[in-house]
Length: 164
Image 1: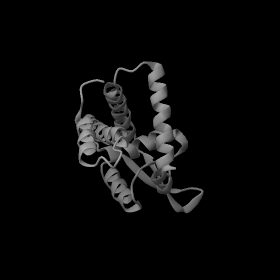
Image 2 (image 1 turned 135 degrees about the vertical axis):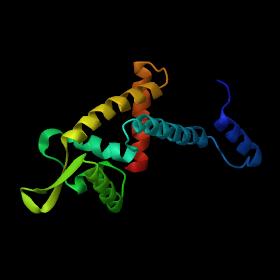
Image 3 (image 1 turned 90 degrees about the vertical axis):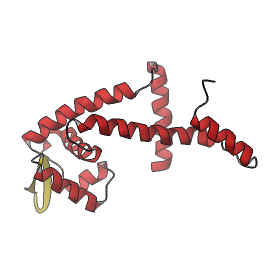
Image 4 (image 1 turned 135 degrees about the horizontal axis):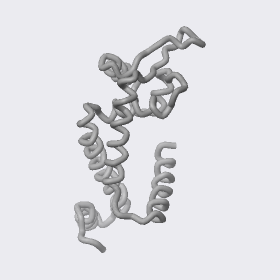
């Protein structure tokens, strides 16, 4: 075993304090929580140079991935980001005020509003995406391709169980 970390010490303390309970799941869950907190901080720091929050990046990136199809309606955006509808409205208002997105009436259904990137928004998200991808690569531990594939599949199964 490598050098014991905070999670190892916590599990050992629980084994002593509550020998009637099995704290071993905390070895994974605790590390995932700590890792997620670290990764969120890392992403937020990387995006600061673009004056974007992670939530703003998420919306702009979703619109960018959608490509030249003309935008998305807010409910489609809401499906791909973790926000309430009220949170989405506030974020869309802010991105509109910044000139990064615009809203237009859906030509197929005038009751709907379509959200799309402006040219400024597209330039910003393209630059921020390069930064984000570099940050993700730098955050990865030195794993071989096979290890990365196995880890990705295990995390996919875990996420499907809790989010499914």
